[in-house]
Image (cartoon, rainbow, N blue to C red; front, side):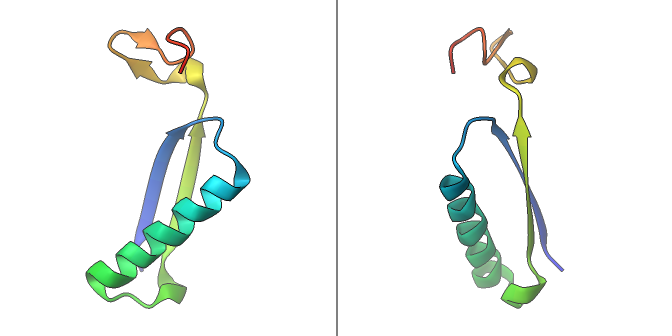
Length: 63
């Protein structure tokens, strides 16, 4: 059973998350031949203050 974990900075809409789940699922089906029903996708919404970029938080950088 393929299992994908996606880490993203918080703030994506529910629609965007649905699109990520759909496209990642299809990519795994295409790449490894797994049945769609067996693919799992877990999206981690990471708070901006917990995401570091070049020594600063995403929040501090306004991302």
